[in-house]
Each structure stands twice: as structure tokens, then as C-alpha cells.
Length: 527
Image 1: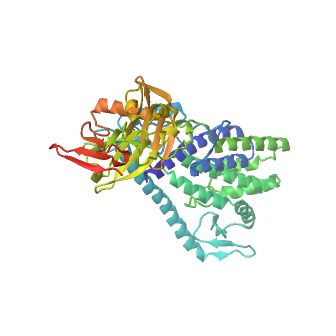
Image 2 (image 1 turned 180 degrees about the vertical axis):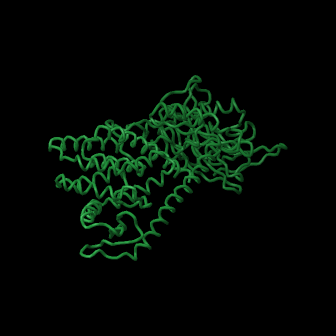
Image 3 (image 1 turned 90 degrees about the horizontal axis):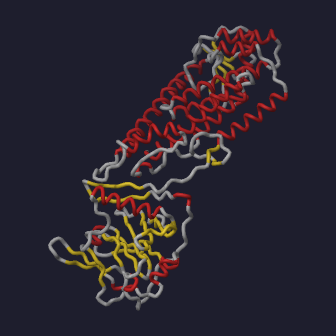
């Protein structure tokens, strides 16, 4: 539910921004045929409905494609990145302040808030759609008793409507109130059949559903209202484009006769109920624009539409990192796996050894305090590479993943290239690992003389078993160090509680030795 709501938030931000752009553009298009602004509204509703958009350097769109990151609930300092400074400056202090995760707390306030808002969003959308669907179905049942208009196909008289409407999606029917004169009837049928020919009844129904999904966004309702207005004016212009002044006066009179009547059904086209005064003025003053004006307007509208349908190119943010658990359970670190710069996975081979491989130089990086029965991670590295195992819940371990790091990074090859693991401990360069108790990923990188070597940081995502060369691995290390210093949380293994031993000195005979609180020691074979 939270992921869906975040997707809707991104679409509602994009759609709202597109609506503002079109509202401004309409000021420059107001003297042109309304078909152009009508088409732009369709682009707006596309942004409200589509979670995807092409990113181009030529986009005129003012906001980023993903203003709210899917993994925002995992950020230590949650923030939005809309691309609009005023919005970001207003929202982000609240998110990173009162809604930031607290390492010692067992719940993430932003995650709880988004879940609650998601439930409210679903309830509101169901209510909006439900009310209008009930009105539509009730009206559809009533007009089934309508009487066919002689000589007209799929046109009915009905006492249950006060205004002409188009009913139905696949095989639409025009429903008319009684009492319409013959001359008015001809104008009304021209108008409603123009709607049907262009598929306006389908467009209006779909746009209403999109608006209902974004019921909490005022700009969605403004867009729906203005789209309907431009739709009706566009239809008027199509009907009167070949009429003389007398014909346009008759058409305006037909509009006036239904000026104060309402259908009460938002998702169907209805004659005369949308901004009647403005429509009458436009009908009476309508003139066909010159061909050159039409070509220029068409070109500008096409360019504006393309600008609205694409998003500006942006940069990916660093991995989302947050604290899971706290007072009620073991503190852990979670990486959402979102990398800066869009790095590609680094190919690697699994670590291998034979029966003569020695256990020299093996470093235990992290181990669950309770052994394999806790099903926690056990991570170590040495001349053979990096190994990640997990307790099987009983008395053994199963290997999750191993990486032959010497084949990935020349520094690792230099560190262990001669196979002398014991000597490697005394060298200046040292591989470092940080493991999150959640088991989501491993951050690792080289230190030389206590300094991190840029370009030699790695993130190993355990779920996808992908390895990335990225300095975000160093960011993870720094984040963990800051958490440990500020909140006194213990990450990874506790010193002295666990170690790796091998009675034979061979790698394949490694065992995890766990020291209990009473001083008892227990050993668990790794392989």
C-alpha cells in the first residue's frame, strides 16, 4: 500500500506541475480554437495517470520524474527532490526533523504516516468513484424507460433528465428532456454527435477516474473542470464552423435555454451546463483562423505537449540507509540498493579453495551472537575472497554468496597475492567490511594509512547477488560509524564473543566458536 501511495504522490506532483504549465499556456492560447488547449489537458491527465516518463535534456517539465523516492522510508534524513526549490525547502525540514527515524525506537514515524495516509487515499478514491457510479447507474436505470425520437438513431426522450446527455461508453445513446423545439433539437443533436464522433464521452469518463485517484490534489479537480470547459467549447466550434451568423445565434439560443440546468453526473458530456455565458460569446464571435495561424498553433502545441510528456534528466541519489529496530530488538542497518550515478554491476567469480588451502589470514567481520540457531549472517574474508553465510536455524550454516575479490580489485590481489594471509595483516592496506543485521547488503572498501581509497569501495547486494563498485560503500561505513558514536549501538559482532578457529589449520575445517555469558564455548562448523 505504501509503495502504491508513493507512486501516486509522484504522479500527483507531476500532474499538478503540468496543470500549472497548461493554465499559463492557456493565457496565450485563449484567442485560438480550443482544440489546442484541449489537447494539452490530455497531456496533463497523462502525467496524472502514468508513473513513467522519458527523461530528456530538452524537457520543459518543472519537476523531477521521481520526486518522492520509493525508499524514502529507509532514509536516515528523509527528503523529497521535486526540482522546485520552494517546495523542497518547505517540506524537507519537516521530513528530516519530526519524521526522521530514531535508532533507539522500534517504529519508523514516516513509514507509519505514509501507511495511514495511503489508507485514507484509498478510502477517498473509493468514495469518489462510488458516489458517481451510483448516480450514473441510478440514472441509467431510469432512462431505460425513454421513448425513441422518431427518425433519429439512438436518441431518446426521457422525463428523468433536465439536460441533454450522452449515456454509455461502447454504444452511446443521446438522452433528451421533453419539451425541446425542432430547431433547438437540430443544434443539440449536432453538438452531442460531435462529442460521440470524437470520443469525448470516453475521454471524460477516463479523466474523471484519474481525478478520483488524485482526489486530494486540488489541481486535479481544476484540471478536470477546465478540460471539460475546453472540451465543450471545442465541440461548439466544430459545430458552428460552417454556420452563418443566424445559425450561430440559433445555436447560442439553444445553449441559453439549458444554462441553469445540471445533470449531476460528472463523467458524461452534457449540453449547456458548462460556462454557458462564455460559450455563447465565443460562438457568436467565432471566426476561422488563417491557415498559417493554425499551422503555428499546431506546432507550438505539439512542442508544448512533448515538453509536458517528458521529464528533466536527473541524477540518482545515494543509497537509502536507515536504522531498523532499536529498543525492542537488535539494531540493524538497511540499504535500499539505490546507487549514485546508475552504476552497472561488476562481474565476479565465486571464491574457490581446495583441500590444501590454509586458514591463515582469515578475518571474521560479523557474526550473529547466537550461532547458526539465530539464522543471522556470518561474514569473513581472507586470501580466498569474501564469504557470506547464514545460520540454518539449527546447528549449521549455509553459504549465501562468495566473491573472489582478487579477480575484481587489484588492491585485493596485492594484499593477498602471495597467498600469505598472515603477512597481509601487517600491511598498510586493509580490506574492511560492514554488515547489516538485516542481511540486505555488505559495504566494503580499502583503507590505506587509515584513509579510504576512492574508487575502491563496494556494495554487495545479497538479495540480487550483485556487486557494485561505488563510493557509496564508503558512505555506508561512515554512516555506521556515526550511528555507533552518536547512539552507542553495537553493529556486527561483539569483540571476544565470536571467532573463527581451525584445529587442522585448513580452510575447509573452519568453525565458529561462540563464547556464552557464563564462559562456556560452543563450536559450529562452517562447511
